[in-house]
Amino acid sequence: MTGAPNRETTPLKRGGLYISRAIYDRYFAGLQTVILLRRENDLLILPVRHPAGGGYLLKLRNGAGDRVVNAPDFFREHGVDDDVERELGVVWAPEVAGLLAAGAFNLTI
Image (tube, rainbow, N blue to C red; front, side, top):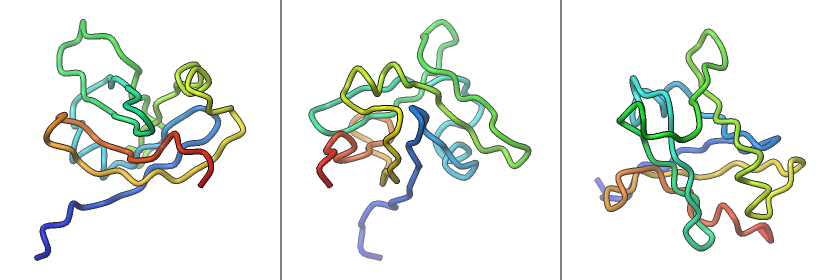
């Protein structure tokens, strides 16, 4: 074991984050919302554990249990147009208790 974090991917397209059932079950099981935050060029996806906490809905996308977070307003506000499609590498970041997509807003890559 190398101790490297388990890196997974989540697509970003049409202003939505597409979260697989595996990622949902591992990090957000039973939750209905997440908060999206930009930290420099990184995207943080934080679970919201209290129902009144607000955030973006984790909408059920299909019968397989995949989810989508529709947030075109958030991404547009941070310079990511609706036509941008990317695969974001995500890892669990215990220091922020959420998923980290390093370099998500670095659109030159």
